Length: 222
Ligand code: DX5
Ligand code: ZN
Image (cartoon, rainbow, N blue to C red; front, side, top):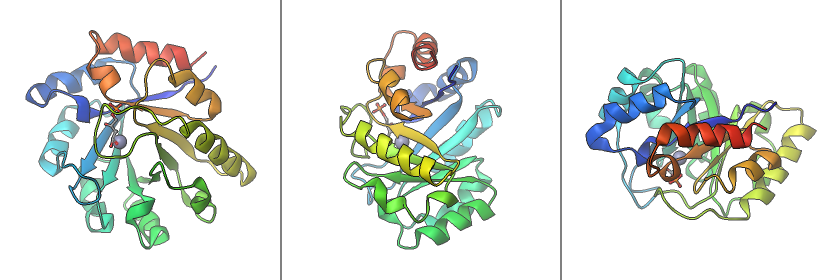
């Protein structure tokens, strides 16, 4: 039986009730906290920064992984800071890194797992010569910057291609999908090869987020 990783995106939480929403994730079957950091330069939106992450880290169940997705230019400047703030996985965008290999090594030196995110237009083939150094690839299934957008169907093709690349190189890499994930596409995504699913609005806009997380877990773990 599969055990798909469910990663609620805190971007969709109610920031005036952040502690309540963090505790909801703690009590749920979610495996990871997905944290979206946006700088208003790499993406046309600004989310939240260090003080908020510090608050999240203070209240989260440390048995759950802190999965930080950086949508910022020049992420090398903040690698050490995110490690100090409790990040277990640090994911940078391929499109934001001139020296990706160096960035990945720096993330690992700080004791974190290293991920690379690909925008919808970026082919997975660009990772061919670095895949063995990665712990995770984050396939963006929307254009990064906002929650609540519609899922881009070409994502399935990208997952299949990436899975084939990972298997051919016998690499140990988690495929994570981010954007527009819901109970209609979740199972097909895991069948294509995704092992981790991020869900923001689908979880937080639902009547009972704990049940919604449990449903996602059940649908994808059969
Ligand atoms: C988008 C972010 C996502 C977002 C997902 O730029 O990276 O993590 O929060 O939200 P939904 O699930 O609502 O598309
Ligand atoms: Zn994200």
